[in-house]
Length: 181
Image (cartoon, rainbow, N blue to C red; front, side):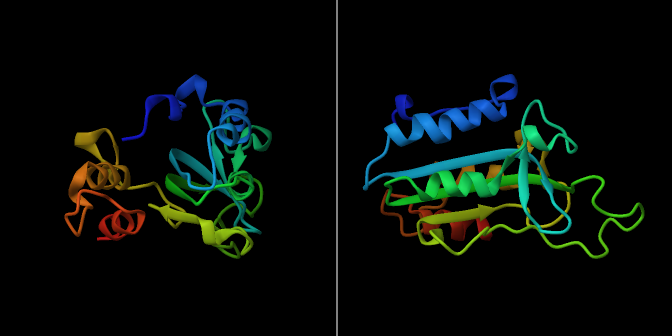
């Protein structure tokens, strides 16, 4: 039910760090008001800093070693926090790996911090994080849909299966409950 003019989809070579920054930090602020609910869905790969747990998204032109071309979840959170919105729902289906060069070879998990999803307490009350993969691992795939299992459940839920009270409206809490099952 969201008008196409209010939706931006970034894919492949149109999903660079500059594209994401433009959409989240320039285009989106012009689209919202205090009654807006913003939905952000990201599917792909991410990197976790071993010493801090900070998570960054690897975009089309970035690699695990190209820190300058990654977009951090902290930056995503900050761009959403400053918006005059009612709520933001962030849906992440990221395969996660450790940032290279931060730990000794053969000790990839020793002394590392788990991925940090809630970067700070400030402002989190208006951001709902739905995270399909909370650990250092590949996200669960769903072959028939050619995407992740988490995305499959999100799409199925948004298609009506998450309307738990059968009132014709899917609330964020219903979607969260549905995908958690």
